[in-house]
Image 1 (cartoon, one colour):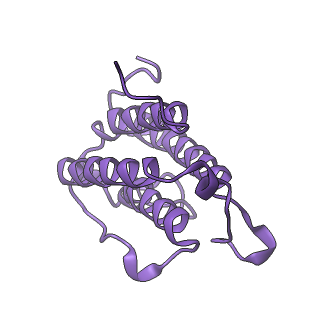
Image 2 (tube, rainbow, N blue to C red):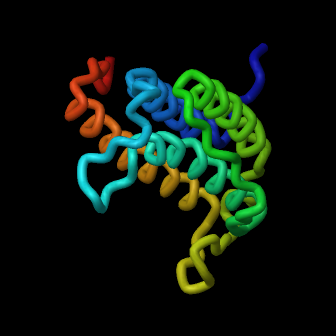
Length: 155
């Protein structure tokens, strides 16, 4: 007899899918281009790569504690292979922590962006996915401009 399905199984399956797609494109980023940016007002490639990793940490921490805690930020990493390994580990740890939340906890309100933007934890976790997908799209654009070979989005 198998264990009962968790209320978060569909969300976690989608989160893992999004993460896998992000890692797939991140693998194309050359270490020697981390300072490159497509415009003066844009984030450099390395900052964008780290933003995916650091932001997931912030969203997870915020979902667990109710707010962003700058002291919990992971350090930026300037090597694609190391960054991917750290992002994979952070993701796995985060999935385990979020998976342990009850339906009641997922319904509780948190306010990481201020009290006027309070939302249920479940909504915040969906905002996290939207955020990652947005920046992953930027990463595809950056890497295509640089002439890097990019994997298919849904391949």
